[in-house]
Image (cartoon, rainbow, N blue to C red; front, side):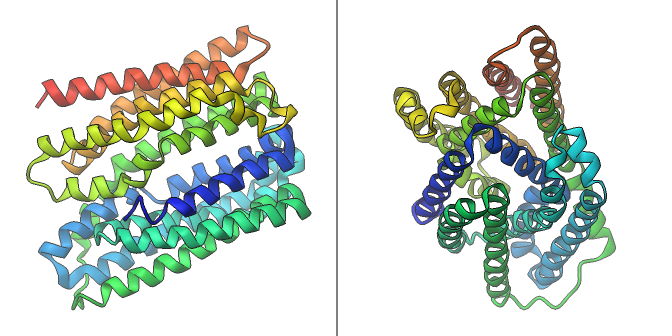
Length: 401
């Protein structure tokens, strides 16, 4: 259900992304990607690791403590709302400083006004994790279709009339729709359980204790990728950022199936008794589901680049590298889900720390030495780093019990 029903919505969202890139051009699309990435990275931190924790604890409580489910769900949502609200407030206060820091003082208004995206994205991430714990994949997938239509229609109309601000407005509108629909599904799921008891303080501490290493991983991801973005801005320009953003969009298309199955995989790993067999199946599913789209993107990369217009010269090589890197990402994510579901999130954190430090250090060294094609080099470094990351996780899983 997660694949079949949501495919249309994701396809529409993807087409909307191409339309936005073509309407805005390489440079302004680079500014759009910078704002979007900045707000989303902050939103990732604002969930405090609940993107995984909520799935695991809801799945556990359904079988062990169904009488506390309602209290558990609302605890997750309240903490996310408070934490994301505080980060959004910080964004509003320091919007001018952030705009200067990313060498785009003209984006101060957009950074301040669209800070609401931090709250909306944080809430919808936790909501989806909760629904995955309930295994409400069919309902979630149908919801993705509705939001896909909103993104597609809203992006085309609003970007055409209001440019960058319109594109961001359409994005925010889609998140408003997602949060509302998610909450409706959650309320309906809770009606199936007689849950009147409240979670204890010790249970909340246990929940937060599990979330801390996951939150650190997500914070690390945010910091590293934002610094990588700043390096591109500093050593290159917003045109190179636009190329990198366009390549990243196609990488998300390539890993569409594994991304859609992310919460499905983690939910079943959290409740499985035969992890070894399930891991082998998930690795096979991710390989088969990503190999074909990677091959298609690489084969037709020239045709794909033609959709973006003449301003996106230089996209071809970065697009191919980003597509190839998706294979490593798909495999490594399965191992990450396995370690986290077994209560070993620190292993994932250490491996990601090694990978991300490698990306930053090598990017800094190389971008100092070159004067062109910086987006290509950034993509190549990410490809190498994700290959090393996969090897580390595989060796740890196979040979260290």
